[in-house]
Image (tube, rainbow, N blue to C red; front, side):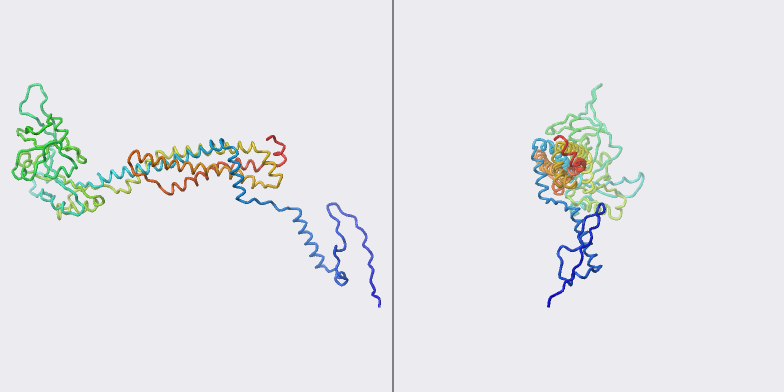
Length: 465
């Protein structure tokens, strides 16, 4: 039995409308007879959607992508292609970053040194001021000479001593001899004070010549005196081996020593210092007016709170204590002042470096117009062109930051070594300096890279290179 086939006439050719393409009426690969005889709407719609999607993909070719490693290798090649120019451009960033590192490092080192000296002197000095009794009052003095022993027993106290002075003995005419020659200036106006035997340790001074009076001189009410080094120079007394004497208010006192090297209470260098018993008998200096206390490092605050109680129990509110300020505030204040003074110089240098990078990158863009046009013609996008020049400027800034940070650290260490200081370097500064250099290079390359990205391929290829 022969199979019967049905012949279908070919469709008439329809004229094409402008903007359309010819589509065959039959599929290019017909299936068997059963499937060919089912012209359903779903299959026709699916075929049209598939053809439209494939046509859109053909109209919009996929953009080429560039590997980040290739981008950085291209940027590095562009930087190394002109080594002298790149080195001179990097120099601006090196100076800027180096100046910042040197400024902050030297400021921190100097602040630490200043605070260290402050620790050794001021931070361990406590002074207690004792008010004088009211005239005509029978009230006992708030502090007597024996109260110093109670302060010396406090934890953290290195040395302590009491002083006595008054307005009446602040300006006394003192002579080095008792012969008054007409027309000659033979006297000096000096202060006369009373102090205990531990005064040299309390003022951190040393005996220039002779000795300081001791407990035996005090107990015997000896008429002896110790001169400050400036007072001895004014009176012309340089040697006490011959037992020179000083005269004031009609009395004579044998000079047994000269005290100098005052690290605190420098006013005593121009004073005549008497034993407490002698001063009370001869000058009326019986009441303690000040107590000097030296403490170990870190104990000043505690001693300042306890000393008034030890000196005058129950009447500590009447005493005035002068203690050193907080060391952390002093350190921050010194470092802030020094940083503020020199930080402007570093910022100016950094701005100059950024301008140099921007100028050189712009010149590089203008010199490589032909290369830019060729890259665009080969399919490179605007973003890829801009990224290449941004990578070059960022590389220059990064190199400048690394070199500047290294040079800055070396300079800080050398300065500290010459001054015999302990260098203070912040690790965050050393690690952040290269990042700051890269950021400067990135910002400096924004305008040149955008200008390169805006170039049209045809114009760039026609421009002379």
